[in-house]
Each structure stands twice: as C-alpha cells, then as structure tokens.
Amino acid sequence: MDDTPDNHPADSDDAHVHHPRTGPREPVDDGAGHAVVLGAGLAGLLTARVLAGHFARVTVLERDELPDGRPGFRPGLPQSRHAHVLWSRGIEVMERLLPGITAELTGAGAALLESPRDFLWLSPADWFQPVPGARMLVGSRELLDWTLRRAVRRDPRIEIRGGLAVTGLVAAPDGRSVAGVTLRDGTALAARLVVDATGRTSKAPAWLAALGYPAPEVTRYDSHLGYSSRAYALPEVPPAGAAAARRWRGMYVQGRPDRPRGGVLVPLEDDRWLVTLLGNGEHVPPTRDPEFLEFARTLRSPALYEAIRDAEPLSEPTGFRATANEWRHYERLDRWPEGLLVVGDAACRFNPVYGHGMTVAACAAHALDEALAGLPAHRVPAESRALQRRTVTAAAVAWQIATSEDLRYPWTEGPRPDRATRVLQRYMSRVMAGANADAALSAPFFGVLSLSAPPATLLAPGTVLRVLSKWRLPTAPDTPPYPPHHPPG
Image 1: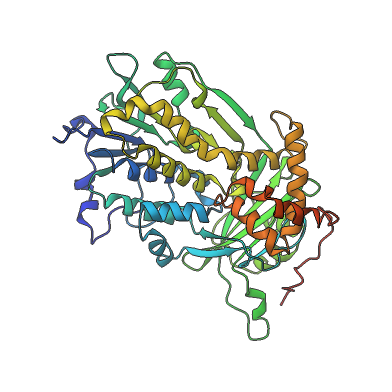
Image 2: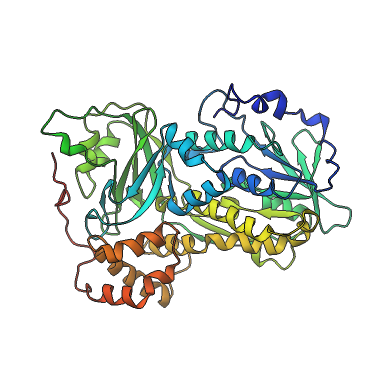
C-alpha cells in the first residue's frame, strides 16, 4: 500500500525513512519523549494516532517493506486476502481519531453497508428479513491499511518506517523498565514507551522472558475453521426483468454444527467481489479450481453458488487456517515492566469469522485514549500495567461471542463450556431465531454484535420478554433456498 501521495511531500521516503545505523533522533526540547509502536496494521496505526496526542514523537516500525504507489499485499497480513468488515463501533472510533477517514475510504471504493438490509443473510435459524441492524464498512484490507497509513502520516509527530525488523526489547538500567527496542542489525532505538502491535506473530513472550519476566497464561479455543477466498469481476447487471437478482450488495450463508460450511460475498473496490468460503473440522474449503466452486454448491443455500457460477475469477483460491481464539493474559502477570504495552492480536485474537478483529483494535485504541487523558507523558511508563489491563477489556465482549459460538462445535479444542455458557448459547439461539424477522430483537442483537451496545442490552426486561414470546420458533430448521422477500430473479 502506498504511503507517498504526490500531493503530500511529508509522506516522501526522505521525510520518513531513516537508516537504522543513524540511531534515534534526539528528543525535542519539550521533554514529552518518544514512543515506538511495532506493527503498521490497523491496531498499530490507531495506537500511534492516540499516542501522538501525548508524546512529542511516535515512530511506527514495520517489518514489511510497505507497498509503494497504490494498495498492495504484504506478507505481514496474510489474512488480508480474505473478507474483512469493520463494524459500526469501529467506524465511529476510527472517525473520531481520524476525522474524514470514512469518506476517504468510501471515495476510494470501500462500501458502507447496512447489515442485514444490504445482504442476503442466512443465519443458523433462518433468512434475515430487511430488519434494522448495524452499519459495516467493507473493502479490501489492502485499501484500508493504505488509506489509514496516509491519514496517520499527515500528523507530523508520527513517522512510519518500513523494512525494519525488531528483535528484542532494551532494558533500562533499573531493570524494571523498557527503554527501547533492538533492530535486526543490532542497533537500538530508545523510547519511553514501546507498544507491541505485531499481531499473531508477536514475540512478546520471548522478549519478556529475556528480561526475566514470566510467560503469560494462555487461553485458547480452536474450532478448526478454514478459509478459502478468491476475487471475481463484478458481473454486469442482467437485462431488465432480471435485475431483481442484484438488489443485494453482499451475501452471508452461515454454517452451523449440523452443516459446518458457509460463505461470504462482499463488494470490493475496482468493481470486484471477494468470496470467502468457510468450513470447520473436516469441512475446510479447498484451495484449487474447480473444487472451490463445487464447495460453494454444497452450502445451505444455492444463492452464493449461483451468484459466482458464471462470474469471471480474478485470482486463484487462497487458504487461511490460523483461526483459533487465543488470549495471552498479560493483564494477569504479577510483574510487568514499565514502558511496555501489548495490544491487538498480539494480546488477544479471535476466530475471524465473527468479523471483530479490526473493531476490537479500534476499541482498544479508544480505551487507551481515554486512559491517557490528563496523564503527562513522563508518567505513562509507570502506568503501563494499568494501561495493559484497561486496553484488553476492549476484547472481552468479542471474546465471549467468539468462544461461546465456537463451543457449539463438538470438535472445538479448549476448556469445555460451563453451565453459564450453555445457558447463554441456548438463549442466544432464541434471540437469533427472533431477530431474523423482528425489528425489536434485531436492533439490540446487531447493537451487541457490532460492539456498539453492551451484552446486557439483550437481557433488558423488554427484550427477554420478547425472546420468550418466540420461544417456540425452531433454532435450526430447514430453510428455503432463497429468502421469501427476495426470491431468485
């Protein structure tokens, strides 16, 4: 992805990339100090934007060479080739931190959709009717990261340096603090605060061990979900009389334990569709042609298969298998070095099928922003432990959703569900069955799913009574091939 627009000289390589042998620049005279963020993904970029309000300089270090000239794939984001969504809460936070970013993204081809109204969405219970839901932003991850980098770099306090691998932390002389990071060539970069936002490949446990700190406890649930995705050219709208077949903008056919296969279709910039097929356990989707299309034929509805059957593929199928939920509980450690923070997937990651990773990263940045309010930069390192606990709370709701849903599959690895989780699963099945057609249930359901409303919203007395009134609705019935309100054209 490009970070050097022609009309923004400050984004040039000369302005932002410094050879590591030169070492860190001297801090500016205001004494606010220097923060280093590891990783230029969404979590790292939004964190850098927050820190720029509290530190004189913020340097983002990225292992990958950042694509130049236009959005492009980079190895550090292998999951970028699959469907991504940013839920309404994430949109709100991102817009607050970077005003105008939503318009910039949609102007470049991303789509701001209303879910489920803009979708053909087959839930485990039934087809969603055009009921109230939540906004979501969809587009390629490459476009999102490229646009965010451009926006973040407009802040003169932030520097983004690509092609630099970090190999460890630098301990301060007191032995209790982190004073910077070491680079692959052996040089050091000094900082008052180091934030690890390197995602699933984070080396923080090993780096902490090298400084004499214990490894964090890890909670892990793995439903063995597999992805396979490919891009298609957006087909032309059929002639008059068949145009009703394209009243939708996207499609989601969910799997369920008795039929653990699903698929997602979302629009991308440049007149493309991205199709991601999903499967659990022995049902992981293939990464070859023509098996990809044949797998789509086996979903609970033929709608997605029929949409892409005659569409032009623009890429080969690409797989992704690292989908386990994993929480590294840094917040539970009795000892924690001052000047270190671990955020995003580096601390807690989720099964991506629920679409929460980017939204949680945005929520964590918002939590950090609130926690730093009124806190002088020189006090931030000493508050690192409290900040670690504060930011990770942003993951709690998404973690509950992902793990309780994954535990519906008998082959899921991880701690077995307790009684409270089993009760929650049964209740949520009833909520889903009612939300498919009832606006009074769909609104709070999507409020919680989009992380815009707390889970207690679904336990409000009026909502509970509404759910109980629909208790006889089946939660896993046979469903028609297409929704009644939108038959095939």
